[in-house]
Image 1 (tube, one colour):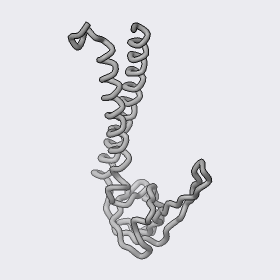
Image 2: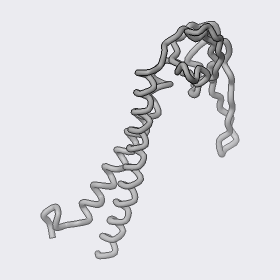
Image 3: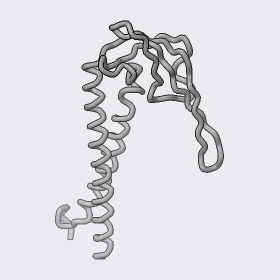
Image 4: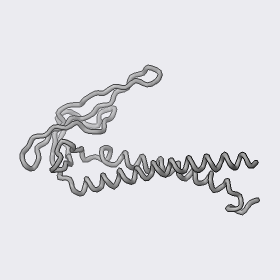
Length: 152
């Protein structure tokens, strides 16, 4: 019985710890995104291309993701082209489509499309998964200490 408790304490500690790290990482990414959104300059851009990238899974099957390439003009009149950091299949955008973008005046090449997927998917995914891991690890850890929950 003591070996089981030791296993659950180790398991809960590791699972909860890793989950906490993932959740905190998501919070940091979210805070950085929020900071960028509040200081970025909005502009209209045009999707000029969709870059198709492929990957192969462990069974040899191919899958494709389409990354939009956007052209826009900064407030200073400089024409800038960038490839979005996030892609999708099927493509979220079409060639010639007008999109709102956000860019930093200091780094216009690191612009992003002003969409939920581009801005908020990653931090929300990290926070959600990390919180679930931390919760499961915490429950397992607390239940491995019988005196804390009133049973002997």
